[in-house]
Length: 382
Image (cartoon, rainbow, N blue to C red):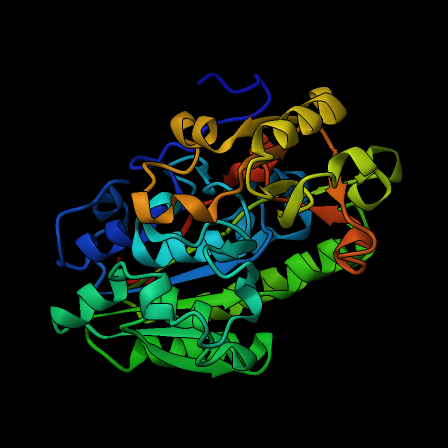
């Protein structure tokens, strides 16, 4: 299956976010899945911090390096990595935590259908239904470290402690809630110092939120990037001598002007035969009523034209964009998959009033959405 020239299949197994933690684990002496060759760049570090900045796309960081001198000064030895598909936070965090592509772990979108129950699951609002251990049954890298007596800590927003997504992506690690970006830096460095050999992962949320609401070409976004740079500087200042810091992201993002938005709720041809609209504006899953899948696919292809790559479920799976998809997970993908091209977004102003008025989005497979940095800082003894 050939994708349009402007969309790209993630390089699972060699250069994606899913390859980071298995490589870190190997560098810490647990397992041999150093897919990125990180052991060479970590120089024997026994304590490793991984800081994921939500929305810090590699293209965005390069364009604003002057606002982030600390980040710009870190080593960039491996080039850009890629986000998974769809390029959205729940999918990326679960790929990071499990070390496998979305088709293996089953968190396949921001919003997905719960097969057989005719209801959507918004992964960022998920608590315990469905059971996280069943919905995402793959073991995590954190659990593998724990089994080898290497402790790990996840430092993230206080509100996400105990959530379904936290359990799915991070089970096996101790969750240490942070109440602010400064607290994130403090808890992360204290957790690193608390063990002789450890992995500490931190999640920073505010840059992505600012981008969605204000746009990535806004003074607010640029000022927030400067704040991210300060957090990174604080972590580096507190880094133990035998520790290393990796900074990465879950996706890039791009502004979407009013002229490249198509509203499903104002386009009758896009709603006929549709049982459930899932996904998000740049990565749509369309679930058809029984018997209508072919008609829905034809209608979406006709209406969207070259504004999106529109394919049926089987074609999407065969393309490899999700990695190999487990048989029991296939139904979570829509009967129709529509991945936006250019700056297009498929909104739904009635069904999704708040997401439909955001300034910037991500989720598709353009280079800007996929490209994420992997930056390295080292303690004084390394």
